[in-house]
Length: 399
Image (cartoon, rainbow, N blue to C red):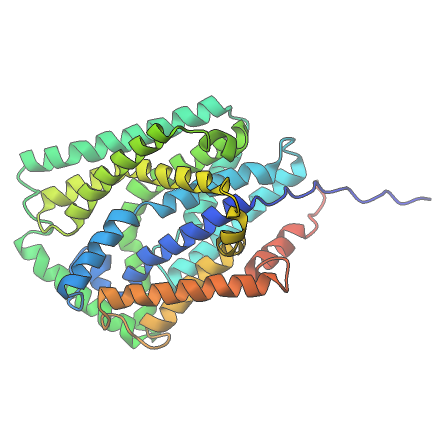
């Protein structure tokens, strides 16, 4: 008796080097932002780090706020939603849906471990949960995805635009902490910095505390913003090739996005270096309302660059880094933990911001070079290979 042939799995969609290059670029921007929170417990609490002094550090703080903060995580989220649709395929077979769901469970597990052990600002847990939600909405049309994404943006814009007015009328926005709260916040930051330097259980306890303190911001800002960008990415993937959609935007539209985005980035940077609560709240509103414009401008500029002669050759290093995004994202946290916490050298609070950015540039350069070296010998990154093995495991038959 002939045995039944094994089921034929759907072929994986071909990789798009342009998307990988954009993902690799976003990884560099994310590192520039995240390394600040590794290098200083004061930064995590919105306080000026005592070691960040001098004109160079002021200029670096402006540069990070203006061009990096809140600009590259949206691109990463957009690409996550875009790739989710590609992984499902047009047929959305039970096998592809099952594999996508298992991928989300793996991201949730990695995110919990990452946040508890290395970096409380983890996004993998958020991606796993929201990715599962987007999977449930896999039957949505493009128009519905765009409407929900726009509604989320409008909601955030109205809420964070109203907040400064309400607090000002209530007399509560004069300062970020208040006279008594500032002294307490400084004491907490100093204690946190010492715990991170010492390592061991105090360090892990501090990481869990930081994670808990980050939850309100996560739920009120990061979750709706990330979901918005995932829906935009999934809508772009459903509606056709990204190059055909975004690359055909006119120069005037691109410059308009740049103008609004730079205005929002300037207001946000101004708020981040200010000491009064009113300016800080206006800065957060600008990040929410106008920040997406600058992220979209980055996306437009990168897509336009794909058509440049020789673009694939000179963007190849970024594309190789993007192919190993999971490995590089987690290794960034591991390297920073070894440099700045009690896991290793304990540099937290000991470097200026300019020096910290120099460390970030060195880490990213090594990662990009390492990704190129690795992919000449293996077809995928180490963590990506483990993820593929997890997804290829046979599933028990349905009862």
